[in-house]
Image (cartoon, rainbow, N blue to C red; front, top):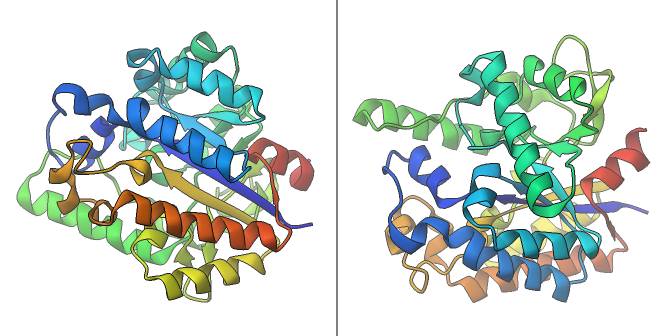
Length: 308
């Protein structure tokens, strides 16, 4: 049976402000992802009878202690919590080894303290994986990484954003990831000793999924900006694959107008689409995949079943 994993990145609003050079978010909107989007995500996945892996930013969890109860409840329902670093530094790859280790360990401590669950999976901010980070994860006994996104259109979009930020002198942490990551395997593999995009006998890597020969990103955000027909075609293409890792972000469940984030529509086009419409598209895609007998599992379960 083919496997379906849904991975949720709970990036707080501060992540997007730093990515676009907007300064610190203000007021109640600073915590909108954990206080408003997270309950909506939990309710949506329960309705669709999907278990998922939720990647948590440690700093946000400390600042939103009430979110711990929601996340604990998800683990009781079979969900998995993953490590998304402590402060979601987009320039994580440029930090020293000691600073990278602190980002990993501090996030782990925050997750354990709030939920009683130790993460065994990791996702790098901005999908920027490198050999030193893999070695760090291996030393700390992580089961898998899920950072590689072999999607050319995403890489081009990131390059444009980084270029514009430099031209306008915006204070952004965003970095381009190594373009050789685009040549990584499309399905779960074990990382090679020489390069994170090569096969070997190292730790498990579970890439984010792309579909069709154009390697279109299979993310809730990309699906949201499609009309119904292309989204349906993407879902049918995905249903023919032996494994899918469908990514969802916290902002995918934000109502820009009702949640006071209308100014972000300029930077995040999917927020221009009504929340209920985005949910409807995602529901149809998930339904197509499960109707094709794809079994919903966590990333940790997928790693154990496919690679260990």
